Length: 135
Image (cartoon, rainbow, N blue to C red; front, top):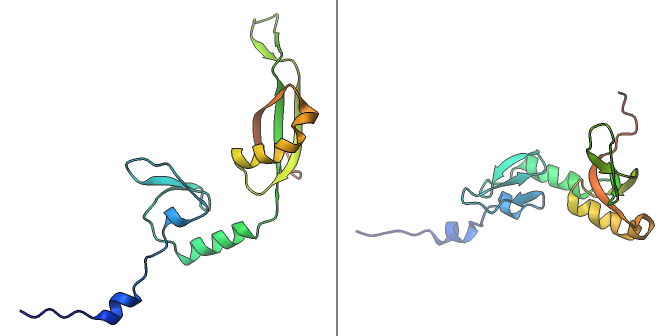
């Protein structure tokens, strides 16, 4: 039996770009090959191929303007509520600054230069800042 191999085809094949190579993918490193896709805000698999829609989302992400985030800062010093006995931070402040993405790492990096202004405070929470939001 003779086996034919087409060398042109095997040389033209290149590995497909997958979620594991995407800058918007955070690998969970679990046995099910799952991770978080920031482009579509959902769980994805590391082996999923990148589509044209994925590439457009990556392009928008890299060309994206900075995002304003609101950061809630609290003091380590606590007070006790006389009514129910629960403790709560003595002082709380909300500040806003720009980051490239809404993630803990980006917020911590953006907060680093301002740490000296807020000594004794820690980041309790952060979220995207919507100045025109109506409640």
